[in-house]
Image 1: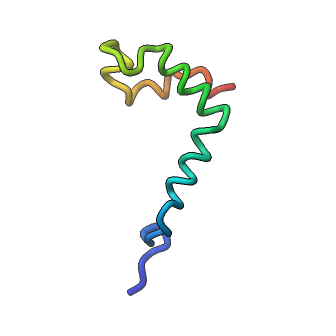
Image 2: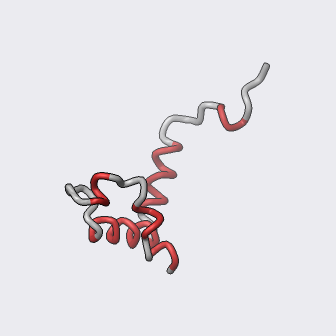
Length: 62
């Protein structure tokens, strides 16, 4: 039985190249900067529970 398209293995580097392309975008850069302003990578609420942080990002609405 053939694999479903979503489970096929992609050529090495394809996912990495896509990830790099996406994180270089202006929107992602704005969102990342806002996460650090909110305390990402610290002992605060954003740092301790980063899963909640994306919902609080204002840059997502711009």
